Length: 370
Image (cartoon, rainbow, N blue to C red):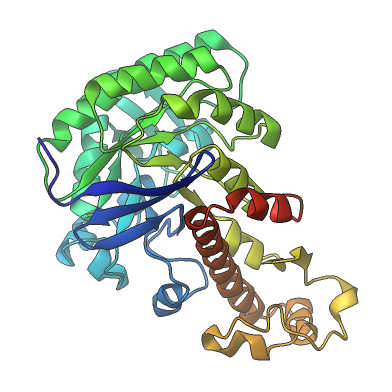
């Protein structure tokens, strides 16, 4: 059944890079797109209205964490996460699959039940089944839902990766059934298989048989070298459907995204802009700079004189260095906002370069700066 409220249109190519447009009920998403991470219904340290000013068209929330805090019963009173956090543009929700890896010491896998967690907050037993993950995401009223998958830690063990594919495929089928014929939202499948081409293709083909609105590469950005990530992308992305969005989960740095775009990836998410902001690290067109360093103590220049959101171009590196050294939270707020804005400007320039056929020149200019 055709989804009347979700579509993807390819507009241009430059090499393998793709310029596209995702249409959702809550608005358009120009691709390649970067999604700031709002795990707990907030982009850490940044006001929602300021996130809008950066040109952000979609953000990410997390099923597992929102299920625990504040709980779906509270968010349902607001008719979903959009009203709860005052963000009316599209939202994608991760299914909780990443927490199966990141919180491995608090959980066990049961193929039939799903992931059985011991809450990292209060120790209560939590069962997150494929069906429950989809039900929660529907309660959150997100626009793009992700299937629940088993995301293994970095490993060369093909047996372990094959087992994860088997479980993830079964869960994906169950998620699709629970999702039903939903014309209001989209459901993405998640490809597993580690750094092995044959396993990735096996996982993808099984997902294509089920049929999804988009396809994500999971199980990367989990500790592998960047070259290894690029290699597996180069070997497998072309097998992904050309008429569906391609999403690389949990990535990443500007160079990660630039490299992935060169292989045909359309969507990204990562905590780096705000996590880096909280540690004094800023991303700029000349590369990244650590504003904690004493070299900036007397630097009167702003991080980016063209960045005038909330007039952050009026704050000198010297002042921000002082705030960091004084442990003032305003430092992380300024840098986090700058970083999100930079990421969105970076994606905008990538899209422009694809449109005018000069992506390779842009790639060569910036790939080594980060």
